[in-house]
Amino acid sequence: MPELELVAVDDGTFADIPVPAQPGARCQSCDYWERIDGGREAPEAETPERGALERLKRGRLAGGRGAAGPYAMVAYRTDAVERVAVAYAQFGPLSQYPRAQSIRDRYPALPESPAPWVVTCLQVTPAVGEATQRAEIGAAFLEDLCTALDRRGITAVEAYPERAADPWLPSPGPASVYESAGFERVAGDERYPVYRRELSGETDADAWSELLQAAKPDEGDQWPLPLPSTPDEEDFFRLPPEKPKRPNPFGDD
Image (cartoon, rainbow, N blue to C red; front, side, top):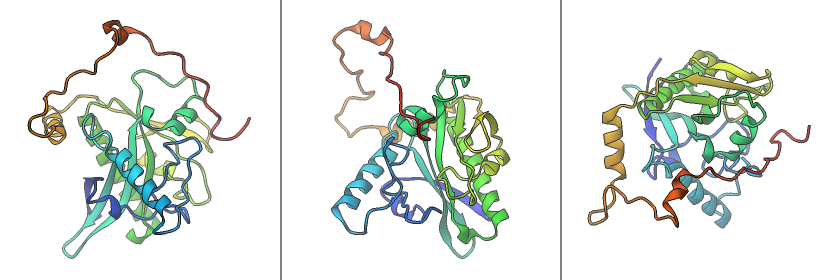
């Protein structure tokens, strides 16, 4: 199998995100996972709405860069002739993806602490070749992604692939690819499963050093950044208010 090069999504790689399997969808403007009422359908080209959605999406994907790393990666297939973007993954802390939280709320037996990171999207372009090679690239991408997250100190990763006639149509990709990458089904049924992989959570000091250097503010700003001010220092130790019940992402029971 050709070597994969994983690159964090930023201003330079944002346009390289491959077209997803679902017709009419576009990852650069999709807010399906970021909003309960979000969608995958792409607005018409060259419209103010599309430009605004793309700027918002780009900002969201880069939003964690200064804390725990970016929330998306593009995988390039490289050989002696060319370097082509063939796969894309979106991921991040559970708190960043309300739809993922809503799905997870349906399974109270799942461990709540520490909250997992979630892979919301895994797409491999069919241009890579036959179905077997497509699945192999997806599994290799997940394996490399989990290694990268492990180095960040993440202790568990979850995903919520849906059963479909074409398993690549739902944005998380096929359940079989997660199984090949060491994930296990821990909740749900075959149609709406929850897959989970435990990580060591042993933070790589060098990885954190590189991340902090990348997130360092411009010269003249304080570094490390000061803690945010609060009305009362006791606020740090108070439990957050109870969250309102989220809508059922699969529709009414």
